[in-house]
Length: 84
Image 1: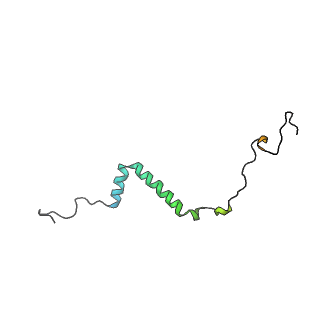
Image 2: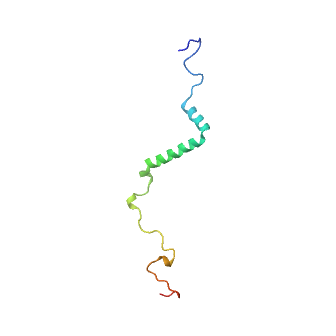
Image 3: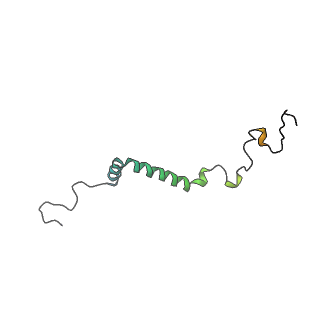
């Protein structure tokens, strides 16, 4: 309680949560960007079961690519004249 006449307990300008967030965003824009990235990662982790198309056990375990060069195939013999 104040001893001055006409003084109130409320501050001259009340800070709402949205005005505080906006002031923080204006002062530290990279901090807001970091917070948004962290929130997106957390939401992705929380809803991962609903986002995925298949269960982890259903992933193909076969090689996806063929041998890039015939020399990469251990069963093929390469000779000077190209004949086996």
